[in-house]
Image (cartoon, rainbow, N blue to C red; front, side, top):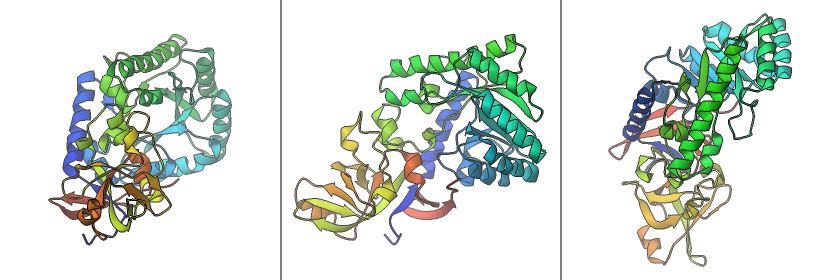
Length: 373
């Protein structure tokens, strides 16, 4: 009750269960897990997630790569295309820490520009070629002439080396049925494995064949031709994944602790001190879970949802929770606290610089996290 709100709570026991589940799944599939640490962005969470600091990890930004490299991790994939203006930072990470920083490209134009910049820096980099497996966000077509063109550009580069291919089936988040997700998982696998085969037939190296989204890893029938899987949201889970039947509400390991700061009797709403910044304005759960709104409102002790209560409106620092009747004002008086289960945990956690680790109803540790670029 003395914790200043809003703040981020983490259940370490649930986190451990989530970690164990995905490790077992990748073991069964016979692929290396390269966890995507863009979700937790925390050394303490990383230490629980991977077996050792030589194990491969994934990040989204070079600031994250720098943070984990300084923390001793030696094999890091930065999973978004890296433009030349970022290469000085990538080079600094490699020089200072000895960490292998894998970068991503999806065009010969980017490869050429990166090679020129790397030469000016006196640096060497390894690149994965991104393949579009159906999301149509970025990447070259599977086993396409464009793929081969990027591979040739990497082979011809003086300062870059081809390391393999990667793809991401982000469109798996648009499904809530297991058979649909399994079909996308197979498309993802086939796109990556088929592209790797095409590269090898053309005489190019392709050591790494990387796929990944949490739903597809969990629903894939097999991973033939794939060397590693990237997944991240499974560490914490969220309502978006609950809405797609990937996990259950009780699997969510993080929540936002908020205080009731007012009773809007005219609008029959509780007013929380957790608004758009504290929760994010992501409503990705709503397509399949309309009552999620901006997050389920849960009991601070048990973590169980108060029946029917969600944050329906957010302002910068206010969240409004409609209640069925005024008895809720007595049940949750001003100054009382609630937990809010997040819609999209990556977005929500990004507002905070620390996890408040809770055991037995008490905050026992505070784990820092890195943010920004």
